[in-house]
Length: 243
Image (cartoon, rainbow, N blue to C red; front, side, top):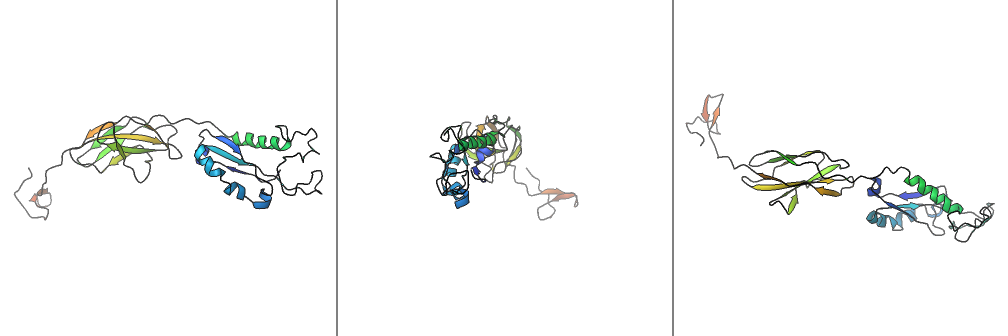
């Protein structure tokens, strides 16, 4: 066995989501001593692993020329497909779970799974609530959710959607959001979805309905404390009043 090995862990598996392990055995002359990490990097297993929640273990062999007693000649670093470890594996168990290489791989698997602490699917988002609103803004808040790292906020024109994501710059980290794209006197429905550590969306909250305020009347005159009189925007005294 080689002293160097490789393992590919997709982001979903690193986040403690349930994953299986695939053991990828390289061919002859494809071990780390011969081609470095190219088999682990370019064999195509990693892309497959990302799509299927798989960890890929790449154990490595070592080349053993005939003069490296007690091992039999294996200059190309092949896996023991034919029993070249017979001198140390006297029972000929190389192709069974009792074989030296198979047993070594099993110990790698045991170590690989040793740090798994389990996965808990994030719960439904905490209650979404309306904090405040004007004719041009709506402020929302919600409770925290275990195992969620962020939140996506959506808005629709009916309780069943469709809903449009509002936080286009990225998931909201925290528990408050202000929608500044509303129109006066308009009814909206808001929902949120929790986001896990790899960006996946989870359950959707119940919708919250809000109707924004009507647009305030246009008012040019205002009272100037400095002038102690109503003035226009240009600062000219006036007797006009706002409706």
